[in-house]
Image (cartoon, rainbow, N blue to C red; front, side, top):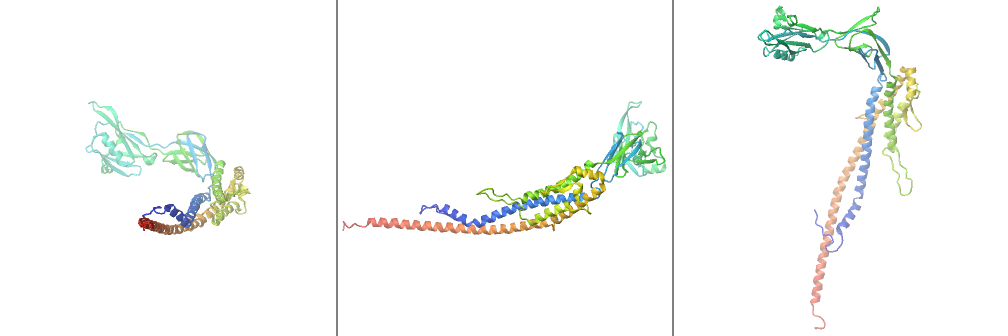
Length: 459
């Protein structure tokens, strides 16, 4: 750091003088910094707009798909049945008789004080005939239950106390339960290995005295159009019948001898909300562009007109025009305004929900065609501007960032130049102070010498 002599000889505030001179010298750099800050604000706003467009692009892709406006309510006349309807459902009323619900097999073995075989080897055979051999660590019923559960054969086991035998030893039963409901989860457990099962010498645990199958594996069963010539029996290994009706899943919770009426109806309120949410998302982007393009006009003397961050930006202006045209122009000759999607004279996009609901009631297929057509055009417009590789708005952001980078390079060069200029001024003023100090010293010396000379009176 340069050594300065702040007014040591001159009495001047040289540091303040240098700072003032540097402020003048730094005016170009200050202007560059202000320009970078302004562009930073623009870039931030453009990036926010681009993010919103990318979100709209995703939503438009969903909205343009067939059935995007499909929404249904599904109800059942009894709590024995629960119903859910997907977007591919169709309005319908159907009676269902629930004959039985799905159950998982539960088997209880005979009571043992200890396992009768050493080593304790069992074979589990599933409904498909697949076999899994299990060897327990000991004859303890707890060890056997643990070995069965760890075998991965789709059967869980637990040891349950079952009193005492004549010798006072505690007896235990194994409770074996299938992991899955329905006949697909049925199983048989044998005492013995797989060879003994093949040979027919292995003992089925459920057939021993005192053993029992508490709950048999059974599929859920329902009947459609019961009691008619069209009666149809449908079974499921679980209690849910997926696609029992087109786009409709039915879950049974208990048997019902009386028919349960399943009703599927179009949900106009939900459909209107889907459309409203999509239109609101577009409207929010248009509103944001308008707000960012608005200039604040000076009202009086001394005030300045402030331009909006998007004012004069042709790319953003073209984007707004493209989005507005996407929702205004007719779809196959049908105006979106006929179903309630319109832009007022102030450029505000809205959905008239009452008009939209009425149009759905009159011709749902026509309304969906208009809605999906608008969504497809919105998707194309948002992709054109927000695509991460060649989107017009993306390119605009990249151009602004490149310009900021160039300005920052200029600022770095100005920083070097200003540092050099300050160093030069400090050296110059330091030399001036030094020279002035030397001159003052010489002046004082000469004055003292002159004062020491003999006066005229002495001569």
